[in-house]
Amino acid sequence: MSAPWQGTRDLLHPVSRPLIERAHEEMLAGNLDDRRLREVRPLVRESWERSRRGSVGPESAPPLDLMSEELEEYRLAHPLAPAMDVIRALLLPDIQEDSGVIIAVGDKAGRLLWIEGDRQLRSLAGDMGFVAGANWSEGAVGTTAPGTALALGQSVQIRGAEHYNRLVHPWSCTAAPVRDRETGRLLGVIDITGGPEVVTTQARLLVDATARAVEAELMVARLRERSETPKPRPAPVKARSPKTARATLHVLGRDRARLETESSHEESMIELSARHAAILLMLSVHRQGLSAERLCELVYGRGVSTDTLRPEMVRLRKVLERTAPDLVPESRPYRLPVILETDAHDVLSLLDRGAHRVALTAYRGPVLPESTSPGVEDFRESVRAALREVMISEASVDVLLAYADIPEGQADAEVLRLALEMLPARSPKRAALVTRIERLEAG
Image (tube, rainbow, N blue to C red; front, side, top):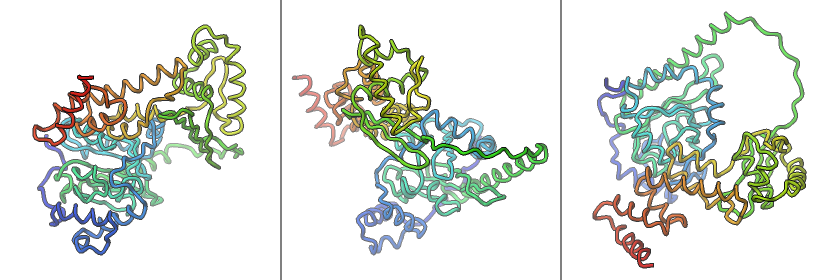
């Protein structure tokens, strides 16, 4: 069965790709009066200008706003979750894995919640950070169909080099916002991404129709629920104390970990001692909790009495009571009452979702490189090994070459040889790789 969005490959606009690319460079350089910019569609040009004013990087990776557990919980409760079957039925053929297109559904902030469709395309798109949980709003990555559709409140098609981010130039996309028909408020966005076939007139009509169908489906479901459910009595309103909305422990490439917390009232940031960093990291890794003996072993090593750990836990609790009271560890077993994210777990999550380039960018060095805590050393090695394994087995040649330039890959002969095999025969990069391999073998 052919994909329902496939139709005549009509051109979105008559302007050539090279002209758009040159106009894009002039925009980035600040030459806003260049005549080539007048050849670019006003919708695209104005989006470029907004992106430039917002200091969006032309090659920056999208931020990963939602981690795996947080993402799953968030999208289960999202208003568009009940409509996913409708979206799949209208936009994907029976065999999704070989559909030749990706469908993405995001929230009103531009964060992608569901990405489905062609397996190979999803893998390639993940390389530029087009993964669930990533923020693809216009303010994060510049001009794209989903981000610009949300910014304008209308369906949008973006073709190839019209994207603000150079990493997205090989792709085209069509997106339409979804609204609540009763209130008019924005709920999210539906997007199809792929090659030239996704920016046809037929593709736009279909995405628009899908958005309207979803709005109607949600409205009918709400009316049905109202007719069947008796109105509950309003519960008394209770005062709520400020809660930590998010806590992140930064451990990559840092001798002293940094703890960042965000609540409804304020944000805070503190640097932790080596011991406190090791304790919090171990409790973050072992979310189910740890006995005093096991935590002591992970932080101090075997043969050390728990009497050494307990006063350190008292000091850590006092630090957290002042800055992040929701994070104060519970005892018996020792565990954190809320999820503590780490930048190392962010990298692992990105690797798992196929966002290889973004993961490599997010990897700022080994986990607490100066720490000698056994648990930290084991976790440091597991992150390093996971990164290397994905680079070797799944990454594109460009990402693999970037990995070969960081300390973990510079002296890795297997990585260099693989990159050499993947490069085209006439690539100018081959000579430098051959030289590096020869030096390693000679040394």
